Every structure is written in C-alpha cells, then in structure tokens.
Length: 187
Image (cartoon, rainbow, N blue to C red; front, side, top):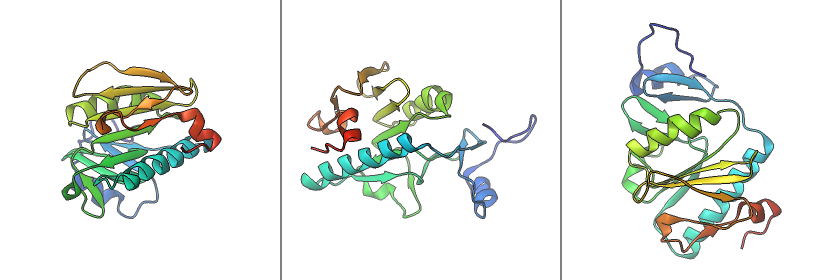
C-alpha cells in the first residue's frame, strides 16, 4: 500500500534513504512512491529459505560466480526505485556494494502473499523494463510458479508446484521442484 497522500511529491532514492534510515518498517520505493511491506507468513518464509538454499547449493557445487541473497536486501533499480525481492541472484559482483545491489539482478523471485498485485503487475513490468533477466512469481495459494525469461519472451511459462522448473539463466541445468523443496527433498 502506498503511503503517499494525493498531490505528494515523488521521492528519490536519496530522500527515501533519509526518510527510512531510522525506521523499523520494511518499505520499498517504486517509481518514487513509498510502499509499506507486510510481514510474510510461514509458508512464504519456508519457500524463500528453501529456494535460497537450493540455489546457493547449486552455485557452490558448480563453483559459480553468482551470489544468492534473501530478503530483506535492497535492490536499487534507478533513482526512484528501491525494491526488496524475496530472493535475488546477482552474477556481476560489481553491482554489490555491501548495502544493496545497484542495478538489475540476473534473477529475482517473489513469493506471493498480501502484495499479489504489486508482484504480478507492478514489479513484473518494473523488472522487465530494468533488464532483470529472469523473474519467478511463486504462488503458494494456487501452487503455481510463473516464470518470465525476458531475453526470450514477454509471456510467462506456468508450472505447478509438483513440476520441476528449469532455470534459464543457468541454461536449464538447474531445475527446482517447489513441492520437493517443501517436503525437505533438496536434491
């Protein structure tokens, strides 16, 4: 939910940083508007944790250069946008400054909760326009995963939780089955 009042100005990242530096609230800046983020539920957190572990294990096993980072961690996409994806994978170490990722990660995963419209519509367009290569939207309620690989297609591939989802940025050599992750089968 945006916290701006009608006729309010749009914020820059610098202004957002000043306004939020002493706040305990988790907030994002999207196209100059500040949004409060709701606390995630248990299934959301379990999916995020297992996805992060699975991706990190793959990167380590293959001696990859990419880093996986879990929320809360800021991504500065432009001078009016700071987002906090649930999972992000960054393959260019120069984008990481210790505090946030500057520029588009290679892969972003959002797990749907109370912010469905933001993740499905607003962030999908934002990530596409800012050159995120791959974007997953994991929907626990409907047990589906939408996968956008913007380098090839604007339309998502849709997978059920019991289907293995190939990761395009890794040339489909990594695939993730959400149902298996939730059961604890991390192979």
